[in-house]
Length: 329
Ligand code: BTN
Image (cartoon, rainbow, N blue to C red):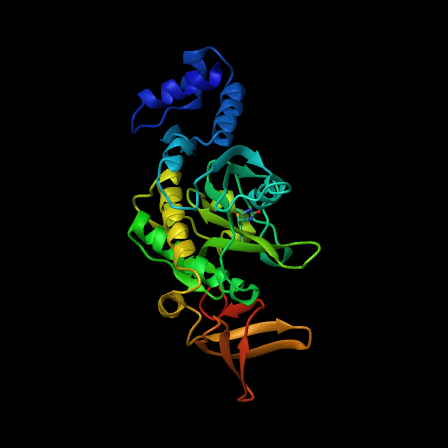
């Protein structure tokens, strides 16, 4: 197969570049066929750099997610069953489909690629194959319905722990639960609550996590690239997605064990990690845009804000722009 032959040639080239002309001559195919095969290899997860006058250079072979490693982690509850898919619309959707008849506490779904990845506030979450870590966890925490709302903030702390363990760098948190590195978004979390139709009581929670791992500016595209960052853009050495997923499952397993009794500990850590604190913010509301200063995070993980007119208010939901983050000035 042409793709395999091209990879063999690029691998034998070690650190140097191989021109399209040279490859086409060696393999007896047209340059257009080489170009097409390189594009297909990129879609398969190979990172191939191309430079005019120099040719192609293999930067990275696809990072394969090894489900067996995840299944042998030995976590108490979270990730005791892990389902892996090459492609899904959304891992959150798959958790819900899997749970129509039987709910399995700790069930984890991972996909290499999502065609309909969802973000908060109805946004989409770009999820190209081989580039990010896209996973969802089903949880049935033993707590009251009100306490469940804290899970979003707790998850942000647990994910900071996981990334710090895997990468040696601790991201910050943009309230309520975006993870941020170098003032750009590294990871988003979409927490969804499923209710019992008859009683209205919580049936389970889905915590959906999307981490940018290997994306380049080109993968993000011109709209997202100025506000997003991947681990490979930020760090010299990046763990594989399997190692990263292991740390996430361990961290979320600890969260499940601690929830909700270790509130003070998670709250303290949340306040330390939260980059929104002390910053000028702006919130778009039906009544118009309001500006203020983020003064604290209260016991319920709500953001306390002092508005320009001097009044203070706890904010438990809403889209907050923070001066200095995501290009907001
Ligand atoms: C956000 O940034 O607004 C939240 C993004 C959450 C994305 C993750 S990727 C895995 C899971 N499946 C989805 O469809 N969304 C979440």
